[in-house]
Length: 78
Image (cartoon, rainbow, N blue to C red; front, side):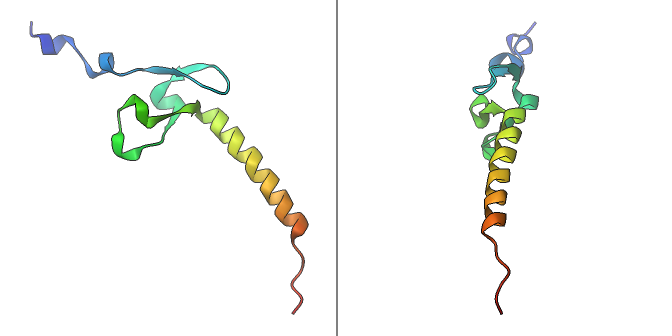
C-alpha cells in the first residue's frame, strides 16, 4: 500500500469552523461564504461568520438604510 493512497485532501483541510457571531460549529464549505474566490479549497479563504448570521446582518443593515432614505425622500419640484 502506498503512503499517498492513505492520505486524502480532506485530512489536510479543516472541515468545520465555529461562527464568531452565534458560536455554532458548522461545515466549512456549506455553512460559510467563500471570501477569496481565487483561493478555492483553502480554509483561510472562507469567512468566520456563518451564512445565516451574514444574511441576518445584511438584511438588518439594509432595512435601516432603506427606511432612512424613504423618510428623507421628497417629490421633485419641477
